[in-house]
Length: 127
Image (cartoon, rainbow, N blue to C red; front, side, top):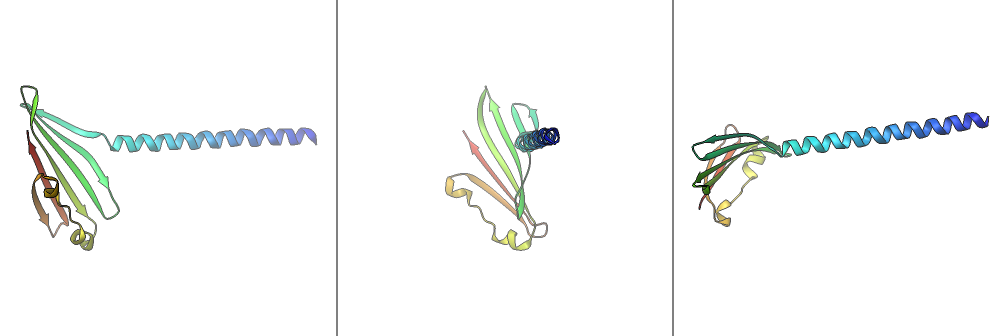
């Protein structure tokens, strides 16, 4: 009877260790996926200018696509711009959403499409 208790205890310890190890592995893989989503997915270099596209960032009511452009002359940045493309899931979230980039001093152009529920906001900065 004593041997059965020892075997049962050891079995529980081994099963517990396996569960803990698999949980740690799943958390690690999830964190790895999150960090991959934060990386820039595509970079083009043309004539001293870089164009970068980032993966889509998913929110509850909308998703955001980012695009970055940088222009270089003699190793110095002379222009940088960002295009934010917001795609909304509902008409209500489209109508309620507003960002005012002019408050922070950026030149912006806005393009709103009521049919496809998208808002494109382009801002640029010259150096």
